[in-house]
Picture 1 (spheres, one colour):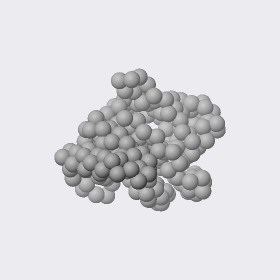
Picture 2 (picture 1 turned 90 degrees about the vertical axis):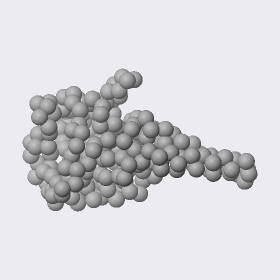
Picture 3 (picture 1 turned 180 degrees about the vertical axis):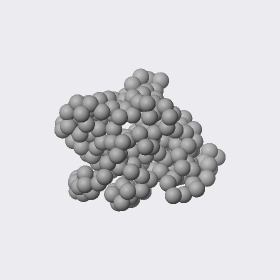
Picture 4 (picture 1 turned 90 degrees about the horizontal axis):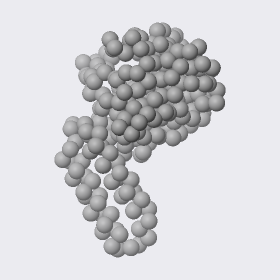
Length: 230
């Protein structure tokens, strides 16, 4: 399941975040790559724990916690502190799969990476290349979103970033552990939740529809109760 969360950050928040990030220290992006990924990775990154990363990361986490679409799609249990990278001058990230387990810096806590997320900060018209390409059974999905928008996809997916041949691609990326480990189960719950929301918006005092909404809501929560890992 690949989900786009439009306008997670407002234009003002995007501008504020870019100002903070562009004045920060940047290092070789391979510092957080695994053994295989390091061979394919060519970009720059703000060091984990850098004050700029923490400041903008907290902004992102607050926005995630207030976004119904993200919460419904991800059903998050734990979120890795957001990281930040940029690509320019032909830099790219070859095909790879994300590490299954990540340890949260400065903490003994580890998370299982069920979902990966990329949040875009630059206008797509301002740079060439830099598409996030995610592979699944239906083919390759090319993603390049407007500033402040986020894409969420299974961490099990093979994916890559195409070379940036003009301008700069600036993004945040992070992983999360969902309460629902299985992507298929998570997709079913997401579809059911969206259907219940649509039904609730169109009830119009119809008693039969109201009872149906209550029944479906019960099904949703009973499935969540059965499948959730806490």
